[in-house]
Each structure stands twice: as C-alpha cells, then as structure tokens.
Length: 144
Image (cartoon, rainbow, N blue to C red; front, side, top):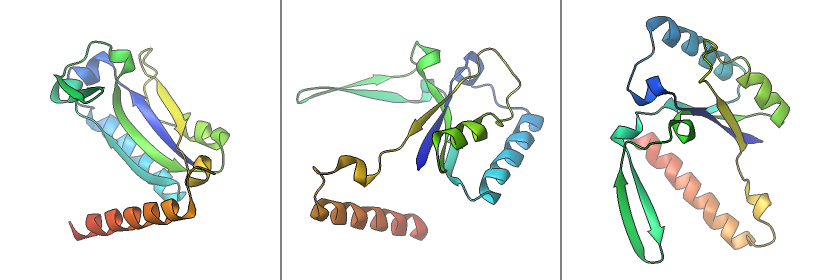
C-alpha cells in the first residue's frame, strides 16, 4: 500500500525559514532509515506558497491565483511517498519523524489510489495504457 505523508506548513515554513543544520541532519538520518527499510518511494520539501500559484477551474474558464495563500494550516510544506503494508505501519513511521514538538507541527497520511480501486470502471485496456504511461515517465526521468 502506498501512502502520501503530507507535512503541513507552519508560519516559519511559509516565511521561508530554512531548517537548521541539526534539523537537516536529523531528517537525513530519518530518510536514510526509510531507504534502508525499503519503504521510501519519494520525498521532498516544498518552497513557501509565496513562490507558487493555484489554477482554479470553472467549466472552461481557468483562473490563475498567485501565492502566497492565507490559510497556512491548509498548506503543505513537504511530503514523502512510502510503500508499507498498512495505515498502522505508516503511522508508526510518521511517529518517528524528527520534529521538535512545536504545537504547529502536523502530518497528514493519505493512502494513494491503486488501479484496482477504480475497478470495474478501469478496463484492462485503460490499465495497460496507464502502465505504459508510467513506464515512459520513469524512463524519461532516468534520461534527465
């Protein structure tokens, strides 16, 4: 089961405050543990929303809204994608994240949909096409 682990933004992360060397070192060690356990698929921090944009959809209309965005508690500052056996295992990993206990810190865990979750609407032909796209995207990333 794949899970996206979403690190919620804080006032500091939205202000562009970078982690200290000690915090980076602790996070590096934690990430190494995820890799050694074979569960880490991806993970990164995100720039503040002031460097981002949102695209709103209303029928055929597209509206671009530049950051920053007001509701810090609803924003994401980073993420991991992990592959574990259950939500309980994902929670166990997240409990080990080396945060300082700041009352603002919060992490959300969401399961990633798998192709089987879309059955019977996703036909075998659609699944094959999806697999080809994923393989092509992975190859393109290797070529960069």
